[in-house]
Length: 67
Image (cartoon, rainbow, N blue to C red):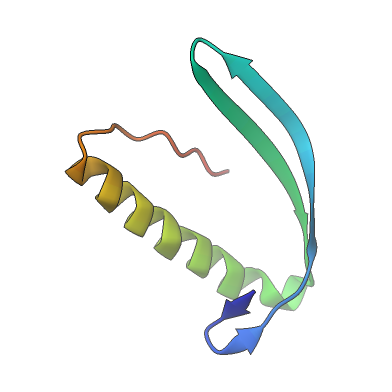
């Protein structure tokens, strides 16, 4: 992944998957170097906002949960 002009690498493991009532959700366990934490969380929040803005335009309510 390129974040703020830097390549950041790491790994992810699917921690859980839930499929019920017509929707599917998944939880990821993400592993990366601690020095990249600020850049990654900033990028995740930026992308989440962009996705949510697009979904709102389509009339879809908030469905992304990030801890």
